[in-house]
Image (cartoon, rainbow, N blue to C red; front, side):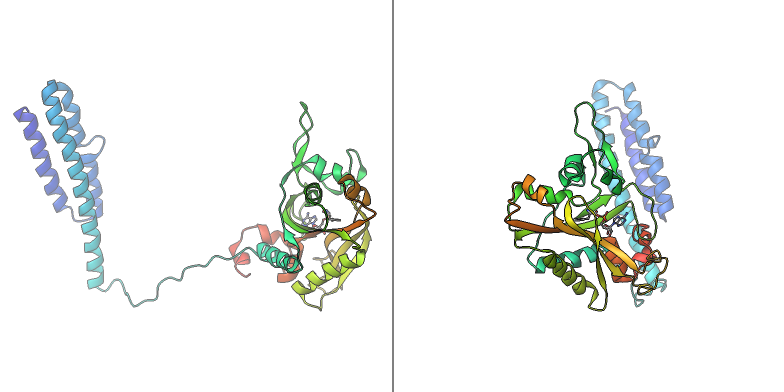
Length: 349
Ligand code: FA5
């Protein structure tokens, strides 16, 4: 090792360690780090100078400089820790930290009101012997429409403003963000034979303007029961039972004739508006009722298409909107509050 280069490393070491020892605070420590260990610092200067040395010298001085780097980094960490402890003890001594003060409370997370409603809703079905299953959110046109008796160009497609993710081109099958959870009916019937009793929770998407009771993304639960001898009375009893469990016996529920190509007969399930109790207000768009879901008896043609004997089996299906239920359950007058992520709103539930 050349004396000059070796001396430079030794000097640098004692200079750096002395400066570190003398550093009174974190700011000085930071400056120290830049001065000795930084990219343009003194130690890097030594390493750069290696190029001018012979191979043997380079090896020896290089090793010494690298060892010094490790030593200085460790010394820096130790000094940082030392100063941190010192400042805490000083603060304690001078009474700056009052350890008798209560700690800041930890904010507890909670489930989103729509999730809470969904869980209660599903629990009601589970307690009646329904299984909970799920289906895909990105769906084939076949399951979302065609197999539900809504062929291309059928006017009923206008009932669901669709967000397409892929059009039929290059031989690919058209896909979409499911507009409702009803495609799950087909998927279940493909795989299971009666008796069937399932509830299918999930998100659905529609290309539509938002207002107090409409969002472009919503949560639905599809209910499907197929067995011998099921009638509209079973459907009504099941839905009323679940609604009463959730909302109590005071709420009024109305089943009204409606049309969905995949059920016959079809019905709309509505509940009296919690804001005006049926008098008519902005929340219920003046009608006094809020539509909660669609329902009906599974169309016999669908049963047959799925290989289920429609002379032996009948079934009912329903698709309920969970945001609408959550509005009722928690008295929220505008659905859009649920997805604005304003904690002042969400923390109330
Ligand atoms: C359907 O989606 C049918 N699949 C329901 C069905 C299932 C009928 C099985 C028959 C048999 P509809 O488009 O009406 O129907 O929607 C069902 C429920 O989803 C509505 O009653 C409402 O509660 C909710 N919903 C519909 N559109 C929206 C929206 N844009 N925002 C929030 N909730 C909505």
